[in-house]
Image (cartoon, rainbow, N blue to C red; front, side):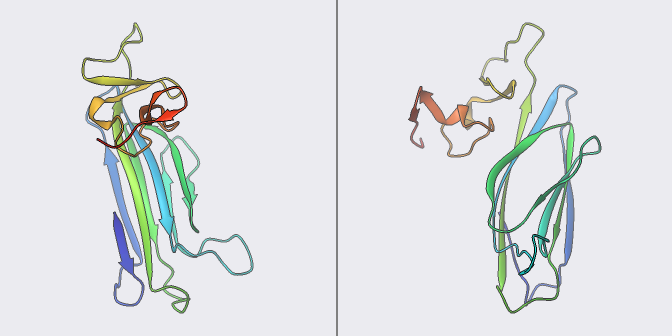
Length: 154
């Protein structure tokens, strides 16, 4: 979780990169944000998180968004930008990013032991992510034990 105060924190742009070490590994990114402001008169983001990968157009997160994003191969870049103006609206911004390392199935479509296959995204995640309250598979496949029922946190 990343929380910052506009009034006391001089940080305006914070950048970081998440990289996997294996050739067949991927990164799953989901997010929730609160207090990342949009312009009052348009959909322009004043504060934002930019999620980018060299092969894709960037994804801009602002406002009060909660949704899963995507699967990225090998590495993903993040930029948190807080507009130093407009300090009257909200004193803090809260951003929660869920970053999950995943792997691809083998040539026969099988995940390694101790892994769970995400049907829609076609990736394998660690079994420990099942029923953890986070959509590590993007479609909540890891949060459903049976059709239509949501599992409870362990």
